[in-house]
Amino acid sequence: MWEVSAVPNQGGPQSGDRVTLADARQAFLDGDFERCLVLCDAVRVRQDPARFELAVLRARVHVRLDRGDRALEALRTIEFTALTVDQYVIAQLLTGAAYVRIGQKTRGEQILTEALAKAADAHATVRAELLLQLAIAKFRLGAYDDADRLLVQIDDAQDIVYAHALEYRG
Image (cartoon, rainbow, N blue to C red; front, side, top):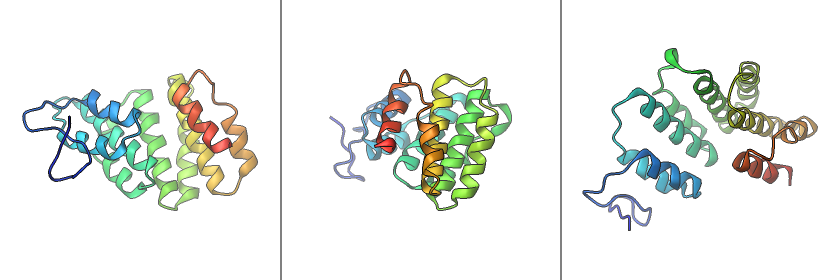
């Protein structure tokens, strides 16, 4: 049972519990975004890869909750100089998605399009998520046919991203 007095009914760690990045990820996958953020705040990381993952997880939550400004804030903690292709594309797709969420749809679309150009060697799930975010940008710009063309490119093997794409196609 998770409890945090500072955030009532949000579900956080009890004192003495060790919270891991995996705990926060699971809350995200469960769709419990506020709990995920509480757990992110409780995670203690010492290595750069874990710091990157934590920042990305926070940004993902804020993008899903349409809090683009807070997603950008989380992404500002990332050191972009030593990222792998997947990490770079993820950071760019979340940056673009965040700009879309704060109403700078054209700027977000441009960032997402640039990320797509660099995503040829990225993992299939990363590419699928990028297509989804670019489709959302197109949708919010009123380019519905372009958005739909992007959404149908998302492979159903990318379960979570594909399911999210179906939400937008519906």
